Length: 312
Image 1 (cartoon, rainbow, N blue to C red):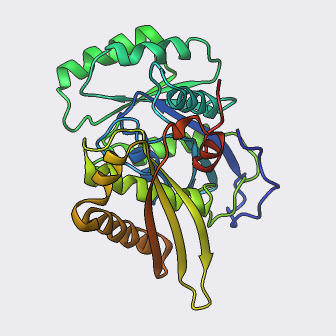
Image 2 (spheres, helix red, strand yellow; image 1 turned 60 degrees about the vertical axis):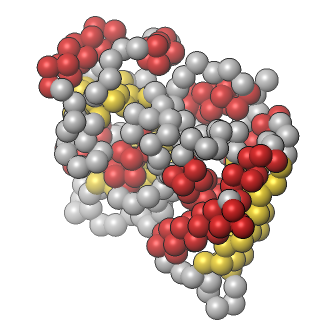
């Protein structure tokens, strides 16, 4: 967990004590963790896609509710890991929960207690942090099955609080944010009031491009792809110049990313650039190229660049 920064000067709270704490957001892949974190922060700090295991590393988002700062740690989905990349992602998830004031377990309200939940239930049994259960996607869940799922989860993990939300519609999120704020301990804020994330510019912009890979290539491209920001610099006119490389394992995967005549890569770059302009608020010059690097997920340097710790 990132060490707290020095006390930050906060806005006048009319004499109310400042509060600040950490909420670790955990759950199975594709439960909607990143969408919920983005909503609680009030803007995008984590990428989303319909594909499971989109989030790979811990990303801190900072939400503010009156005099309270809530540091939300968005973590990768917890699952039974196989390859080294999987193990690093799961380690990042449980590491993000270390010493949190609340562990918020996000559950897809449409699902049941299948095999995906087993490593999560097992891991939570070893934790001492207060546990909240948050059932997501309740706008499309069957209410009867949702009640049964809630009862089963209460028997297994015994959460201190339970909330029903929809990250898509926003239902229940204001109430959840207020409850989290009320549960945070008194203490100085860890981040300036205008800071929404601890992600570096290089990592954040690489994640935006990786999001476009997932959105545009769907099932065509395996998970063994990564995006590295090789260069990020501000030009004299205030615009940002970004050079990134997309790592794949085989020449056939490179052809998929490039598309016929390079059109697919151009479209990925165009959409990523448009998203970055919206998020950064300045013109962006984005240059992408695709590199074949066999077994890139056994390269320590790549793990460092994409924000993961090396695991054996």
